[in-house]
Amino acid sequence: MSEQIVENIDGTAETLPDINGADAENIIEAVLFAAGHPLEYSKIGKLFGATPGETKKRIAAFAEKFNANNGALTMLCLDECAQICTREEFAPYIREALGIRKGGNLSNSSIETLAIVAYNQPVTRVYIDTVRGVDSSYAVTSLLERGLIEVVGRLDQPGRPMLYGTTPDFLRCFGLNSVRELPEVDGAGSAPEVLLNMTIDDMLTESEGTEGTEAAQ
Image (cartoon, rainbow, N blue to C red; front, side, top):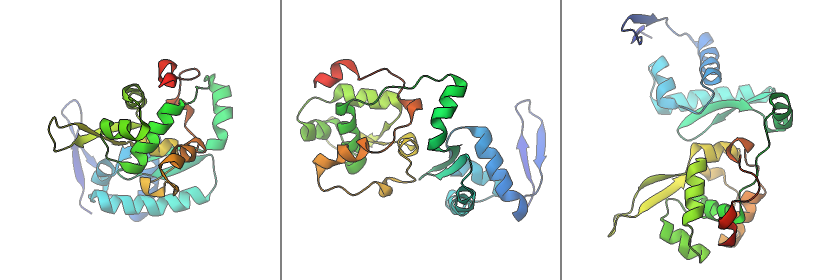
């Protein structure tokens, strides 16, 4: 692999040392740990002169070994990015040690809306309203603010309504690498029950109790 030259903030140039096979996994682990958030394969791949697809395969193979150790940390390989985070069973101890207040749960209407998006994405808000039979604007806004869904495009129809899909944070919170890993459901009505039975990361549910007026929808 040829050496890489990067430019620092002050305008100076720095040469990255060549990466050999023995160093690659340590570098991936160090970068993901230091990032503290999901990091795109495209960014990691630049270190190796590799494409995002090649980088994803490399990290996925490393993740199998990393997670087999059953340590305090786990490596998640999402569709477009990867992340190192603590295992779910250590959350109570982390909250206690760091004085983190446990958050409230998503309301029923948010769970319903999130399930509709997750299992049918990309979807418009009109589609969500039709399935739920009520206005879902509050639920959609709440999920956008929590970073569990995002705008992924616009429908090629009059008015060009926005299309919504789930985010990498949704996958991380529910312990999934891809939406393809969502459990199968018997019908639209059982989808919310599936999500209710899956763990939601407390970091993304910091409000106390239900979400006020949304529960009345």
